[in-house]
Length: 334
Image (tube, rainbow, N blue to C red; front, side):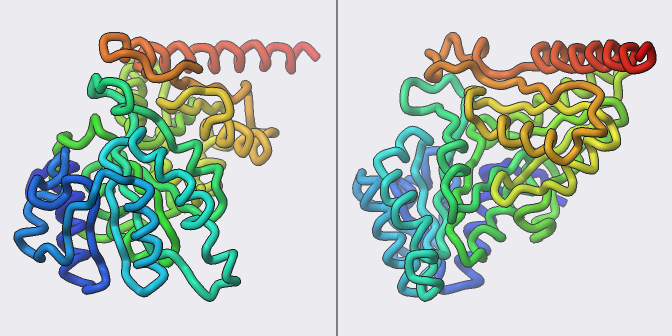
């Protein structure tokens, strides 16, 4: 199997989707001749022509509105927002129209479209070039929200997203674009199914997108101290795989959620609530979160202080074990 980067896996997914279905079109800012800022669309215009992969004006609201009209007319558009914080001018189109068209028309119309958003930090980007916007989309009924953490899932999830009958927000971790792995480019596990990236018996760490690699690194460090950490990669934020997460937490009795986004009212808070509701009698300690701080994304030189790292995850794992031991002693003495 060839070793390729995540950007190349995404490129392969778009190429294969364009070849397989004439209804698929790719457009956005600089995705044509340039091949995209991160080269995800490199070569697609040359191979499929300017009617299938083309540049648009710098007008995100117009891009998404145009894509919605095409989706309602039978096409399967895949649009790129270039950077996460560049997508906000299109937000009204997304939440008011893209997400609601099926409900508004009682199923008469749908929006089989994908909005690709390079998101999150880790590249030292300046203002408007790094943000964690998943909470906005996950809070909007009618949208599916997906983010790959591995090269293989970049291909698999994008192919499934393009084939999906409903709109999908496809969040691509910028820091992972040039990570590499040997992968079999095939459509495996579908949307809505989480993956157990590492098995363990002591603590469950739930993560998604760019946080998965950090969680795995922390799990490896914890193993050296005698703590076996199970790492769950959500893959899909919406729909959410309650079964896989709950099964893991019931086994370990402890749960830590990791996200780059700010903590307050974030996706991690929803995960913590769902775990508490479904696994209350199995928990030996409170569900904890490690997240970015409740501030706007900081300047590039301060970004490393904002993003969750191995040390912060290990500190939280220690807190989970300490609280669990204390709770056990109380239970025995009672």
